[in-house]
Image (spheres, one colour):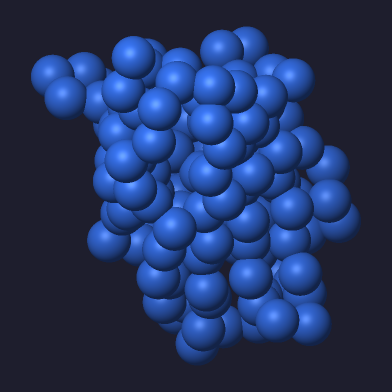
Length: 119
């Protein structure tokens, strides 16, 4: 079972950048697909981006061209580089993991890190 811990959230102004990190432990990292989800106040949780064990990615339309996911198998880390942040990116961001395909339900979750973008 994998354990996930996010970090890197904060308060920034619109147009700024932030980089979120997710540290994974307790599992064979290379076996897991990873994803970033977010949940804005009063809204349902949504997927931001998925990345397979081999590095294939799928981004939500709302973040394409602004956000970049990456993973470091040597460090068991996943990153989310967020550029040109908008107020609508304000949310709690969660790192998630699942074995196998990057599609389907993610059973493993971190505690979340809060991102607030002011206008």
